[in-house]
Image (cartoon, rainbow over all chains, first blue to last red; front, side):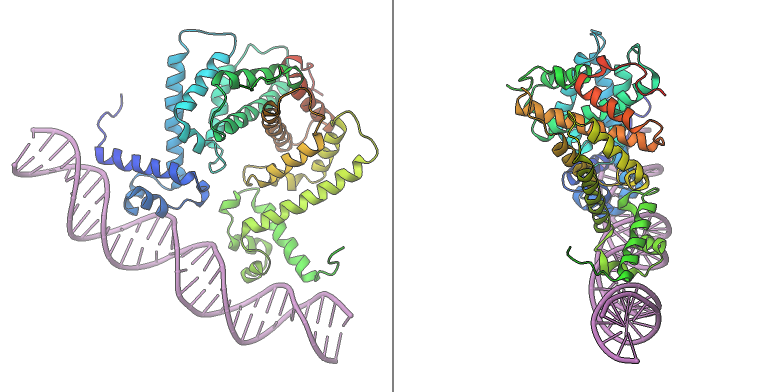
Length: 193
Length: 193
DNA sequence: GTTGAAATTCAACTCAGTGTCTATTATAAT
DNA sequence: ATTATAATAGACACTGAGTTGAATTTCAAC
């Protein structure tokens, strides 16, 4: 829409740097990744980095934003057809998208990342799951969100780290169940194959 | 037991540095806190820092360990008397201890900290709440923990950040309720005054 | 294909923080 | 009061940051 014509040299440089970042973040925390290392990994000159980003956090932020934009586009596309009860459908769609971009999400949800991405993700989740608030008072609703969203993201992290052995439907079902009905009403063998 | 006789100069130096760390972590992420800034804040010579710690992370680790030891001592002391159903008692005790050490926990649970402390805390919580496992399969139990523990810690963070307006009993009750019975069975106005 | 514009490279520089070391001073323990 | 040791002060080489200017390469538009 805006700028179709980006010099392919720029495209290449930015792409190399983004890949280098994701690669280095498999091993190191973002705070320990130097501009030097980034450029050596990407095979570009250090001066070139500063033509595009102010520091590694800036690069990370742009990667995060890009992922979120693509995710939003994906979910909007998928969600036109059906508006199921709440979210087991939406949640599964989301997990499928994550699955298709494992490396990226693994990096952005790992301990080597900052919190910006998780925050944005929680905000997105809030929008997607915003209900006609049941009879709970506002403060309780706030605390419910603060409990459930990090919990769900934590489940997602574990699922990714351990190779996504469970199906997206199993994980979705589990998250919905535990949020709505708690531990005491979980069905047995929910995640067993 | 081991070394009662620590030179009081050392005590002072370490105390100054720990306070400086907590102070700086109110503003900056641990990764952005330099040895220089630490020493200037503490009012000690930079050489002295290296007599005690290898880097700011080392200092942080020792602060974390100290807090955990004190916490353990406190909980063991408090828990002799009664072994209530699960944990509403233990949880309240814990929150009371947190309340008595707000600044420390605020720093160690904030975004400016690393994950080590949260991990240790979750491990401790696991031990304290280990149940004769209900009828759930091992994998589901794992995922339940991975959902609930970060959720609970997240609630704790919010409670701290917003000035601990709710009582420790209210928060404990809320956490237990949402873990066991989920959102759908929360009593209204649970956190209202 | 040629050419003009723009992106990348290269080398150099200052700056700040690191980690180590040695000599000196201050102070706690007894 | 003496002795051991902790803290200080200053210097060192080293690493990465961020900037700059000139040279070079590459793209894109004609």
